[in-house]
Image 1 (cartoon, rainbow, N blue to C red):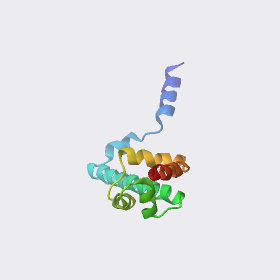
Image 2: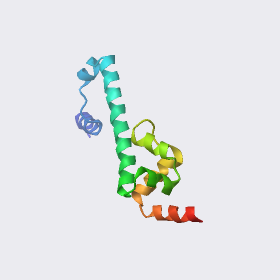
Image 3: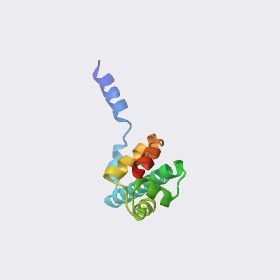
Image 4: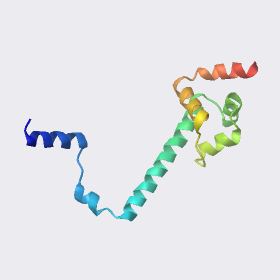
Length: 111
């Protein structure tokens, strides 16, 4: 492989970067982009937790009762005030992939 072919291969793997544009980006622009990215991530998280609950066809209260998650936590997550962490986050991912697991949770609560 020639040096030119190698450079071309490296550029293809890295993608196209406009180094002049990157170098000319101000600190204020970087902070603005960071804030926009954080808002987009928050909106994605809100859509995910709402989507899982909607997929199950439950109100917030019903979801709270079925999962034993405090209603206020669910409301805070769906309003973007906070996001689920730890076990709650795992539960959401599990219920998204396997909605049938919810019935097992309901049965377990009755025992």
